[in-house]
Length: 233
Image (spheres, rainbow, N blue to C red):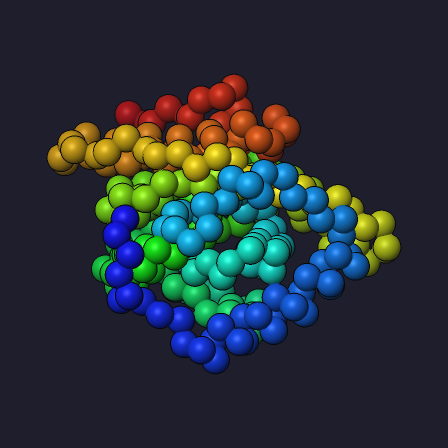
């Protein structure tokens, strides 16, 4: 994608982000043993969709704290109203989206970021699964990839679960492993009508399947067996 200076992070937002990152990195190291695998796969300075599995509250701040650049994040609009979590998302800044709804403003903002050769971080599941097993992806991630014409960078996070904070506060320092796969492209979507929707879902499922290959089977959820769930009807 050709770089265009149509999106620029305000200077003071960049500073605020770096302060937050500088605070959270040592805090996460204190609470957890954080291990990265595959950092060489990150295409720095280019546009891509950073797609990750989302079990708990910890995946987004972990990635934002340790990522070697400042990705823009897409987050559910309700997160802004969640006390401490809301303060953090307001502090870092993110693109709010209403889960499961078409939002032209979100699409326009995301395209501006990608056209400026910057990455966008998104959970294809549309939010926390609240359990280790992955939920089915929303087709929205495939729409953004297709419209933006950018690769996907799959990120698999192992070790986060509903009780991980309790373990950390007991000084057990649970291991969290962040595996970064190789960037890949999805097939272009040329269909119309119902076949187009089906193609988007297939592409979204492919993103989750790529993430699943980097995780133990207990994380696979609806993608157990190396395939996507069948559509009803």
